[in-house]
Length: 189
Figure 1 (spheres, one colour):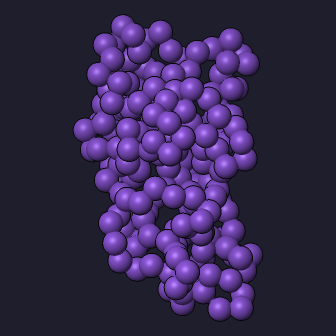
Figure 2 (cartoon, rainbow, N blue to C red; figure 1 turned 60 degrees about the horizontal axis):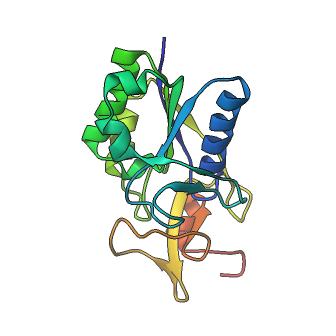
């Protein structure tokens, strides 16, 4: 039976690299995986998934996946979605339909929570309905498991602002809860 998978982790935990490796593994075995990302993530272009370690691949947008006819989706052995936290509840529900009605596994990768430790809409829905939920771990500067995505600037950790601000290492850092709450970006703070 196909399943709806949610692989989540803090910034820098290699979620995107894992998504790209999963697609590669399907291809290596002669299977076809449909690779997609949410519409809001345009940092590397609308139809490119790019990981921090340099892996990248062409993809389609999640809105396109959600509007595909069942016959089109049945041509794939899996659907792989990056940045699922930015999906709507309706999009996640459509992915669940693909699993349940078409028996096509759907692997979703994304953040669990934002820089204020609030759930994203897509992540909240995934946590509620995914068949399997797995954490992709990364570490804080202190060596403990990082679970928090700290947004920062030259003045330190940013605690207010819009939930969505696309960025990378120059805007976000993964921290353990203790150092997130203390506002410590590095050992000397």
